[in-house]
Length: 256
Image (tube, rainbow, N blue to C red):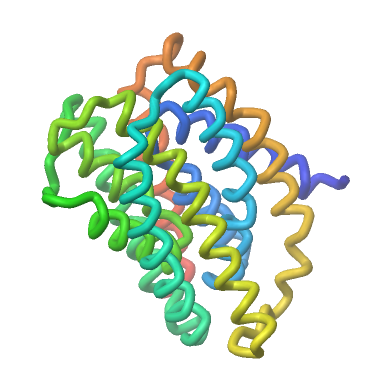
């Protein structure tokens, strides 16, 4: 275990702490860091979703133990998220990494601005609303797979904006993410086995993935405690500034 493992262990730990407290940020932060280190969009998304299978399961267990789950909402979000995630994976593995990277960076930058907007408002925003959680999960799963992050910013923000109980919204969204991550990871594996996707050095990022998993799994049970001792608005500002700053830096590298 070299420096790479411990770097991503720290990233995964911090990202999962914030994700467990806010209902968003793990995928956005970890994907942005991987892209900033030269990982292709498809490999970054595959790596993050492989890690999310474990961190999401740990987070789901924690939220179930604290009774933060709405089971009907969980079923509908998960169903939509699985379908959207598989569709997004197919598109991501069908497009050249260099061609799609500017769009992925743009999406992550947008998510950073959404998070900053939440921090600035200091209240529950309402970017758009849905009458059914299933199409919401569909959209969230699609953008999560394509961008490597987006499930929380799309799903959690919308649930909170439409008046859902914050504790149930965050807990249920985190639990559903485990199912979405498993489906997306299976879709990446199927694309690899069928020859539809050329991993192009994915194995080189094994220690990065293991670091993300280790840090995230350890942080998941601590997130509830962190919610009590740190102001959520401050955390939201930190995450928003981090993601937006990294996205701007990546845009500068791509277009300068």
